[in-house]
Image (cartoon, rainbow, N blue to C red; front, side):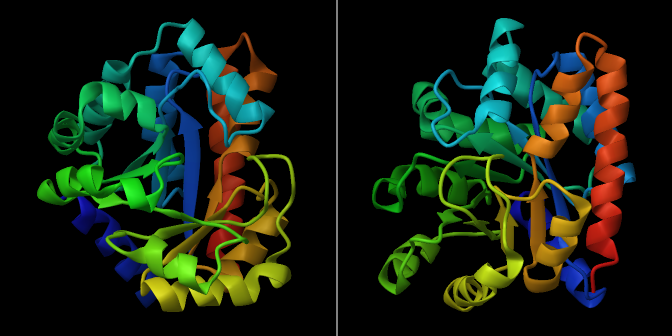
Amino acid sequence: MTVSRIDARFAALKTENRAAFIAYIMAGDPDVDTTLDILKGLPAAGADLIELGFPFSDPMAEGPTIQHAAERALKNGTKIADVFNLVRRFREHDQTTPIILMGYMNPVESMGYEAWAAKMAEVGADGLIIVDCPPEEADGLTDALDAENLALIRLATPTSDENRLKTLVKRTRGFIYYVSVTGVTGVKEVNAEAIRDEVRKVQEAAQLPVAVGFGIRTAERAAEVARIADAAVVGSALVDEIKNSLPDSQAGKAKVLEKAAILAQAVRSAR
């Protein structure tokens, strides 16, 4: 189904007049088996879409929480092949929840655009967010993803002016990810009212759903964002539950799913 799965999910949520809750976790943190258990549990906890990070040694856009998650995953020996296999195994149990891979360009370049896109389609991933791939240099990757009907999801930021937005939205599919704060993930809190007009600008420019992330750690903030955007993305607050439970990975899994359920309920009841 590929990008159609993303489109179908947002279309269904629009009829319900509610925003999506998007949960982010890092593949391989604290280990691959626990990641799979969390993936399987997230839809029941209320996640409408899932972002699955693939670990990279130099995650420039990430704050300490996600950086340390990537370090733990790499230390445990997590490979890109493991990330793809996680998606494949998730799809054995769930054919409807969209999975977005999120990470950095180096692993994609190493595999090759066509091979990466073909593997995504084979295992059942739906979209890709590459933090360090400017649109001016993305045609090769976009071509490969388009050939497999996969979404390249771009990032817009508070510094993206009208001209930049025109460039960012070209050939973007699925949704736009709006980075609500300047800086890295998990450090600053979003002010929903302060970004209301910016979110509207991005929605108008892209004619796509807009998901807001990078500054949501609490149910209160998630609900505020859900009132002005099409989706609220939470990552660091979930990943912190794993870190705080180490070395007990089962406790970490339970804490992540508990936190996800609280956040999902806040998003669902926001409007």
